Amino acid sequence: MGDYDIESPLLHDPLREIGGSQGRQGNQGRQGVQGFQGNQGRQGERGNQGWQGSAGDDGVQGHQGWQGIGTQGAQGNQGNQGAVGEGTQGAQGNQGLEGLQGNQGNQGAVGAQGNQGFQGLQGSQGNQGFQGTANGGAQGYQGYQGIQGANNLVVSMGNDAIPYFETNATTYAIARSFVFEGTTSWGVPTGVVFLTGRSSVAVTMAARIYDITNGNIVCESLGISGDYSTITVNGVLVSLPAGRATFEIQFKRTAGDGATAARGYSITLLF
Image (cartoon, rainbow, N blue to C red; front, side):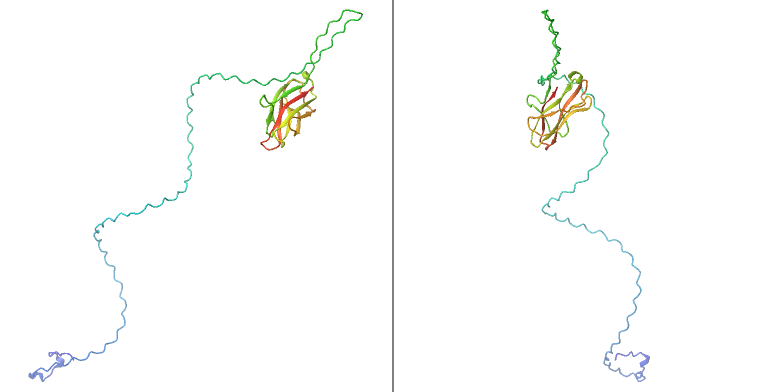
């Protein structure tokens, strides 16, 4: 047991009032058994948030880092092409000043000699002269020479270098033109002869005479397929004008590819 307080009224001993000596201190008592742990108390209420502290001083700036050393990266892929810009068209500029008149050019070279002209028609036959008187009379005067009769008209195509007209067109192309004086002056032709050829055996062609003055087809031959020189006689002539008109000789390719051509050498009007 522990020490006692001699002044404690609970331990009053009448014997000690006589003044006896103090007794020895008793031995310490054994430690008592530990008591059971009490239940955990309830969690206290959350306290109010404390005041925000003042900002601290800025720290000292650190040393600059070492500069890195590395190899250059590969070139990037080309970017997509940008959209084409669309702007409004600018206003039309003012017309420039008229330039000064140039000097007169030198005289050109003399042109090549033209093709020989068409052969003229033969005149009509003259009237017979008067017969002399009978019974030994004086011989009569010789009659005047009559007009020479008509002859065929030949129209040639091409020139001295290339004696034909050539075309690979599939519509009629003009080879030559000539003047027809009319049936009143020349009479009525009995037919026409086309002299033709071709650049390939694959070619089939057509030929015609067209009156451009009056807008009529005078004659036309289709399906010509022979090589040089193919003679095609057409005895059907229609819509012949009585007066003067311009006729065109026309050819076209009706079969064969674009590298082949129809050729015309001449036509002859028969009288």
